[in-house]
Each structure stands twice: as C-alpha cells, then as structure tokens.
Amino acid sequence: MTKQRRLSGIQQCWRMAAIIVACTICSSALAQKETRRDLISLKSVQATKKDGKWVIAVRGAGKKLPKGTKVNFHLTWRGQDVAVFKESVSGDFNLNLSPKKVPITQDEFFIKTIILLEDQTTKVKKRIKGDTDTFAPAAAPWTSHFFDHGVRLATSEEIAAELQEIKKYFKERYTELAKMDQKVKTNVEAAEAATDFDKGGAFDTKKWRKWFDTDVVGRIKEIQEEINTAHTESRFLPYRRTLFLLTEVSAGVGRRSLSRQKKLYSSKSATLTDAEKAPEGLDTESVRRRRVSDRYLNELIKQINEELKPKKAPEDKSEEGSGS
Image (cartoon, rainbow, N blue to C red; front, side, top):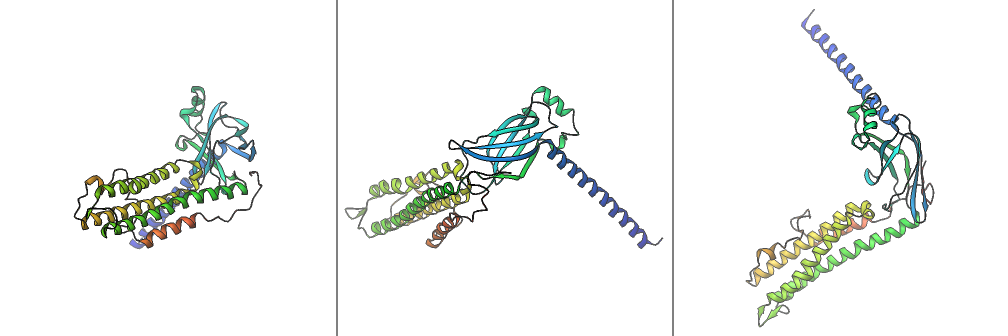
C-alpha cells in the first residue's frame, strides 16, 4: 500500500469517526430536547380581561411529573421575565395566572416553564433524582419554552393611549434639556459680555453658582434619576433603548454645560473647585462622543422620535387578548 493510499485510509477513518460522534451528539441533543418538551406540554393559553386586570388561562399537562412538583411559570416579553408564578402541577392542569403589571405593547407574551430541584419537597426531590431518564441531570434546571402559544395583553385603544403618554414623557425631558443647553450658552455669553452675572465690573461667581448648580447641574441629575427609575418600571420595558438615548442626551448636555462653564471661568480668570469641575452624581460619561455638537444632540433626539413611532400592528387575534 502506498503512502498516499495509507493517508487516504486514515482520512476516511477520521471522517467516519467524526460522523459517528456528530450523530451521537445530535441524537443526545434531540433526546434531551424531547425529554424537556415531554415534561410539560401546553394545550392552550388564553388571555381575557376581568375587572380591569388580565387573566391568563393556561391548560396543559405534566404527566411525567411527580405529584406536587413545583413549576415556575414565567411570563416573558422578548425573552425578558415580566412575571413569575410558582405552581404545583402534575397530570392535567388548568391555571389562571394574573400578572399585576405588564407593559402595554402590541407584541405577544409567552410562557416559559422552569423546574428547579431546590424548590421541591424532599419527597419530590427523591423521585426526580431517581428518574434520570425523565429528569436528565445535565438538563437541569428543566426548562421549556412555548413559542407557539403567544398572547397579547393590550387592546388597540390601550396601546394608542399608552404611546401618547410615553411620547409625552420623553418629549418633556428632551425639550427641557435642549432649552437648558441653549440657556447655558446664552448665560455664558452674557457673563462674558458682563451684561449679566457681573458685580462692580467683576464676574459674580456667587450668582453664577446659585444658578448653575441648581438650575443646570441639579436639574440634570434629577432627570437622570428619573430615567434610572423608569428602567425599573414595567411600562418602560419596551422602551429601554429609548431610555438609553435619553440618558445620552442628558449626559451630553451635562458635558457641554461643564465645558462652557470651564471656558467662562478661564476667560474671567476665576477658579473652579474640583467639585465644580466634576459634580458628584452627574453623569457626563454616557455619551459616545467626546465633543458633543448640536448636530449630535439633534441626531439623538431624532432617534428617540423614531423609536416612538407606532409600529405596524400584527394581525389582531382579538381585542381582549389572545391565545391558542
């Protein structure tokens, strides 16, 4: 046998081995996927509104689950948890899940189930650990996603009304920041020309500090805190990117304001303290440009307004929620 033929034979062996390994891995993955799917199945998910609150009726089965198994039912929006319900299920089950608050959006919400070993009673833990065919240890925590059972939790009227309120929230803040930015520019020019912030022909630092520290730095910090709070509220979940853009506008205005103040103090041969140069708690770093121009701030505001445009609504399954 020639050297070339020997190499060819070895290569064929490696190819065959690779195919066998790939098939084994694929079969294992498919088996795990099938096992996880078999743990819980959903027959239908329906959403209705009762007394102003959404109720999600979930019908399904967990026939391989030991009696009393605790299952976490996660209500998710774009992969993010909106609410979690811990339920004891086995066999056929009918559940009514009532989330306290959900973001008003035309997007669908989905159910994800997770079985955590640490949530179980001693008896159920023993059953689970003893049944590795059903509860493959490598697959823990045993998770199932049900993307074929989406529900919409808002009517068209609710979506339209909420969008108007959200638009108002953003417009009020970016408009205030834009006006503040212009006011800082105007007051710097007035101070440089000695038409304001002047006392006896000298730059009145006390008057400047009283205005700048309160009406500029103080207010920007308040707006940034309001944005941080909004990040924790469920109604703003669909607007996380828009909040980041608004944060960038606030940081940009903060950076420009400090820069203009620095030039003013330099022109007046006045001294800024370290605290005045970099006020504690004021975010000036969450902006992607070192030099913040009018054009860039306007572009950020334009992006905010683009984010707030009504999205094309998917085909409504019903006006009072949906499911399958």
